[in-house]
Image 1 (cartoon, rainbow, N blue to C red):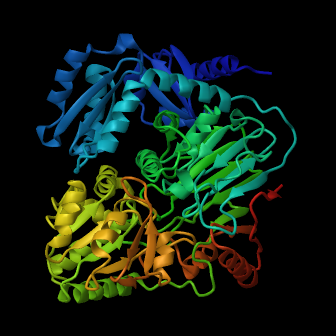
Image 2: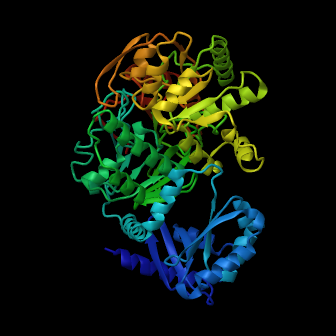
Image 3: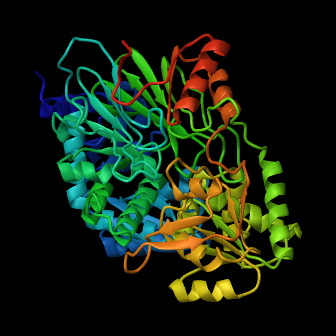
Length: 640
């Protein structure tokens, strides 16, 4: 059997044979899914436009070219020369050099000017100093999360490089079995909403897709101890793939490292940052509610260190027999439909994650264009026969009508929302409504993680809709920076002051009223009939939000400083405005499947209550003549 070292030597020999004689190849190594080539002749590669792409195609590997140390201009000299090359208008805010990989990280307000026309400025930097430039955009809004993650990964880069090299050797190992089968085991989120978790396995490989908690059901976690899951040991997993950062998909990923997992997590870059933000808040909320957190914050940092970001559309090896491609899911920033290509064309499986099929103000709709998909694992949150949401323009009109009514009654609008996704969508609606005069100008107070999550959105504008991206980057018209939006950063005292002031809108976490600042707002505003609580998102069974939505006007809260239970009588109005969900409704789910070309041979309907999964499964079977299932947890399906 060929060892990893022998494989690398064979690849080096092939690269030497397929490159011109004036290019020296010093060494090659694996870093995760990427084959890294070290050479003193980086410029020679740059001068041959198609050489790298031709090599990648020939080797069927993602390829990165890096300079050897002797090809690099000393850091201080390189810093000065790079600043001379880049136009002042680019707004360079930081240069950071990594000698081990020969890269210089350039952070700038206008990265396009760092790149230059057809990459000319980057080429000049490489030619002049030898360092390979890596360009990042300076976030328009300061984000402590983005800054902390980048600094942490920089500090841990030596260990991270070791992790990547280990991952690379594992995933590029030769296959050991001639058997051909593909199986899926459901560990959660079947006939329920939450605790998403699945195992995709072949004779060679076992991949975990998502690992979340269940809203409103503390203690209900994925069946990780099942024989198909971690019972064989956490390192029997080859990789974890995360579709998006919401806690019902990501909350328990750090617990894998507590059990001993040391492999990679594949997801998009914004999902990586949001995952860390939400997981740390998850621990904080658990502590405030007197619950024992399932893991410590150091496990969140360990998960971040093992995360390998991949961009939409990039085909990436994650195991000897599996390639992964992530596509926009339209649900929240960085959310992805995960497409798995198994074997040499043997089988293809797509996991929708959570999807929104049509465009919104914030994001483009979900992608459903794949070369092949035999099996589709499809979310069914709004899969019931009557789950048709209001058109977004009608929803916006209704929301503005509700706000105007509350304003005329001199009340305060209280909107619980997810910090990621729905809050930013609502901010865009409110900003335009006030700018156009559709609702009166008034303060919009952001409580909880909403502002920080918004800052992360502005750090990754390429993942947003083009019209919004243009406003943020080029028109000096960032809607998230309007004066209406004010951060609640004074704790309980500031909340009391706001509650005593004139009319305002309070946008706060958590979206399903499971803890966090919304509990304080219910105490402060709930007793006044002129105030109204406006639901704009899904309320899962078992959550306090669902109870209030169904008419319960006396609630018990334990989210107090001393942990005592407290009963609160709600006299405020309660309104639900449909149409702002980040999930596709019944029609959107059907259209997602109907417009796939080719259509999948079978669909497994998951991530919905029992009636929703059953009804969507039945409809797809009857209308589109395909095999469909509404699986239970702990079922295993053999696809091949």
